[in-house]
Image (cartoon, rainbow, N blue to C red; front, side, top):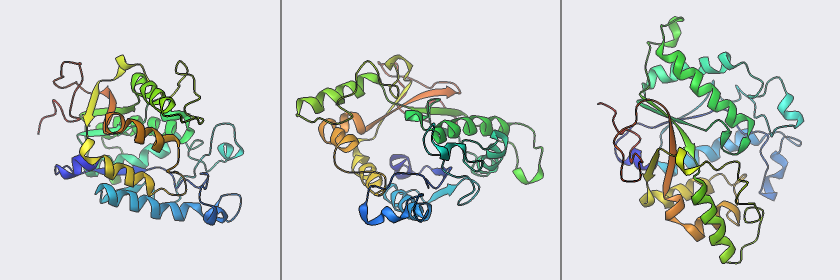
Length: 271
């Protein structure tokens, strides 16, 4: 996002929930948790704004407005069964909140989670479904006057974590003597990783890596700078986290390099 903003591209970011059920990693803010004051959502809006400021994204929105859809928690938890959770929301109802944004912004490219939701989070999976449905609806005839004029997105991508990159990161951390939940994972059993052959696009953005990491740190209640993701980034660095990988799910692929990868999300898009 930071790279494309700096290149003059209009970037719009849409968040589907306030993350009310997220784990609170900062002891001094533990009282905000959903099982206490249930005030985490409001705080996380400030974290989102800070993260977007780091990336230079000025157009960021909450789907349907703040609190329209409740964070669903993880699969199998009571929060997942709440009727106001995003996971339980009717797909058409949620998609109709995204359609007018697509028709207003008229994006050439849309990026969302893969069908596993990155790591299986129900709200990420729902975001994937809602995005696909909204993109399809946005392209069709206007059936409500308040939804704007039809718009056809040229390309729709899923984010991707190539298995080879993840395994290399785990091995690099082990070589450094780092032992945590991440390094203990079986390299052959990484549900969030995809086969390298499925990757269609690799975006080199190493020059923006510092801003990416700063944006992640802005989510202080949910992201810790010790271990896990940040330990992996410190050991693998720009090689893994300065390059972002995608799978083209809709649209025609553009010119590819010797690896068979596009190097620009807008590759082959006219205008």
